[in-house]
Length: 294
Picture 1 (cartoon, rainbow, N blue to C red):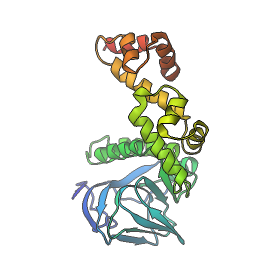
Picture 2 (cartoon, helix red, strand yellow; picture 1 turned 90 degrees about the vertical axis):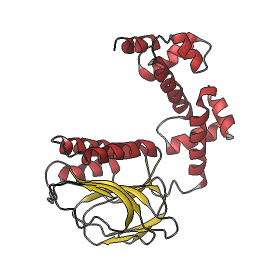
Picture 3 (tube, rainbow, N blue to C red; picture 1 turned 120 degrees about the vertical axis):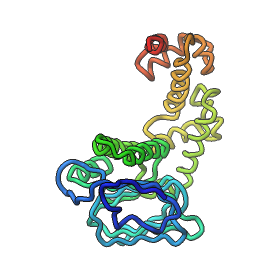
Picture 4 (cartoon, one colour; picture 1 turned 60 degrees about the vertical axis):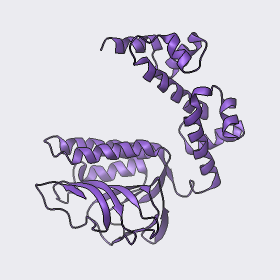
């Protein structure tokens, strides 16, 4: 287990009911006014009998489940927890977090304070204490990992960087969060399966019809799933994956637009160029030249 900050004592609320952890903590003043400040954060692998019950807590919290199962009680309401669940809590809300005895939780957490923290959570997440499911967990995970890495460095820039990353995290949650129980049914499972299929097969897909067929669903139903659970249509998502792949390919030295088109499966270079520009706002040739100068 690792905790880092030599300038202040480890906070009492850091749980000992963990089998492994990476945690950091900053100066522990309870600041309910002013700019957002990150007080602590980390990654915890909980023990099977893990249970934390708090009637009061000095900070706002954001916790993200990456493995295991458990329950969260917010006030009088019990919520199931599993992978890709994210929850928030505010100082005035009683909350209890418990792990499943056979499949204990592995979770990230950050604690923040300040009027700005409350304002941002209210503006972007719509509630100071709530449970969500995350449609794009990789983005949230990467931001949390960067926040922990930064918090553990303890440089003159650490506090400001952590604050900026926490602001980004809140907006990323707003971008990909699904509120309530909409993620617990068959339609959400189908959406996740289709999304993963597109991610695995995007290089050989070109149309909505192709995509629906390989996902084994009707085109109209696939569109309805993405409208309910995503910010893009299935075709937009497919096209973004293909053009991101092309952009990565164009980073390589001496790669032509024709080669990039062929790499992503397009025989018509001009059609590929139009699609690339529709995604990035710049032609693939101009994009390639930007990197050839560096």
